[in-house]
Length: 177
Image 1: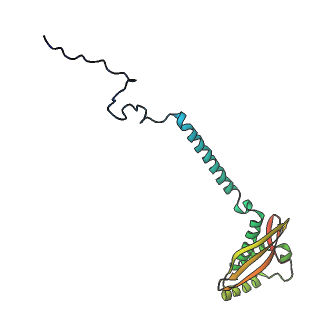
Image 2 (image 1 turned 180 degrees about the vertical axis):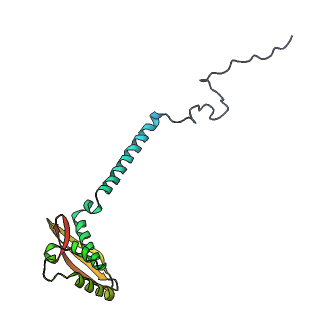
């Protein structure tokens, strides 16, 4: 009797166990892009973060640091600007950071007196260095603070000065009284 050739089976369908000997061959969706249902929570979180960052950046661009700062910080900025004007021998800035009562006082220095006095001090002592402004107390439109300072050429001679700062037309200004 003649031998018959083995019968060929019908091709397997997609749902069958394709390539059982080949690991990963049955993972049809493994390399496919994830579905939107799985990704949308991450996209939503990313959008929320981006919107928050843009909002923060816009607020920083629209409102200067001085306006975002607390009142004690604004007082410290005013004191720092006052002493920086002295260090830079900048009479206009010095006047801008001085209260009206001092500006109108008879002993307020002229521009020439201010320049001569501060230039002489800079040459002899160096710049004024303020490592700390402490004990800032704000009460309405009046504030006080303790300024710890020294000259950079005489850093071993540390000094402390109590400073009065007044709010005039929305800006803090250093004042003698």
